[in-house]
Length: 474
Image: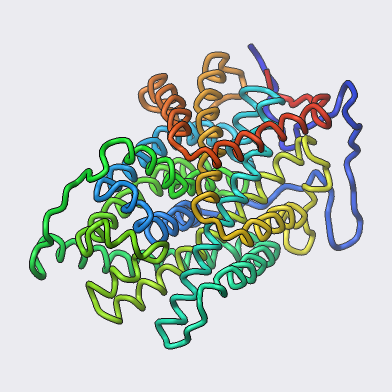
């Protein structure tokens, strides 16, 4: 079955009751035409920084105490399960991304493989899924900011966490408006410094836990709560692995995407997955899972204090600030690109894809990313924010795997990826099944919110986008 190549601007409103959408052309210096494309300014280091920087914040600095309270030392298995599922999705996503290196990532792949309805639901769900993830990272930043102030002798209380998170979220939105390259430079610097801190801390902590630098830690039952909590914890902490997909959302801005996209996505999952497992091992060895769970979102601060004294605590709070900052920054960037791609296809009003002439960034989409994020930050609900983000992304990831199978079945003329999934078709099929199955282990509130967002997205399709036909879609 032959198809035309998916163009940069594939949305055309051609039928039915949906509103007719005319391209908006602005001639002032604020915006340029809808046909403008984002510049390719990101290299491999930028892609890895986005992937690692997004993932490393939640997994290492926010989740250890929460995960240990649910699953004990076996939380390390929960993180491993998350890494395996992420890899099973990263490989199909890498193939699709090298064939379609467009901004929007998973939305673009699903819409071109499964059609306009699936594309609309996933595009809008990805928007809100990234908004929930961004809010989660920013709330984590707020708690670490309060702890940082406490470590230097300024006690302000947890009540300041949310206002600080709101201020930083607004700042990151403005930073991304001024240019992707500026945001990438910040991301590269933050991630490099963060990895240096973590390499030393985890290396020292592992040697300490093994008894090389001190007395070995007392053994603890590996699965104190049984096997089921391992899976429910995996569903909670899967938010930690959303970063590799962020790389795909900026595919339209990456240099040499055929090489850099797969390396960035797969490499970031492998690097961060190893760090997560080491972190749980070090943390539960320092305190035991029961006591570790009492420290909540900033448990790693106490682990640092236990291992290295006040200097260790200060290093961890500083690392936590860097990690949650990088996660939030990369997630806001990815959110805006998802909105940009959906709008370019006319599934949202075309004005949402306008590009700023001065900075070459989708400033309207960034506003639509930052605004809802700040609203969710105000709730301060860490676990719910994390699980809703995971729910919506797991649906996306499962459908990415399905889309690969569908496109491979038809093998259209334009489909010529630079990377092919090893173990096809087993890899994408297992990736899809695992992604959908993990949703069943989430708490009911998160499932209800996730389903509600998807139903609302389908309603938007019926109201607004059902007359849109995407070129390159079945």
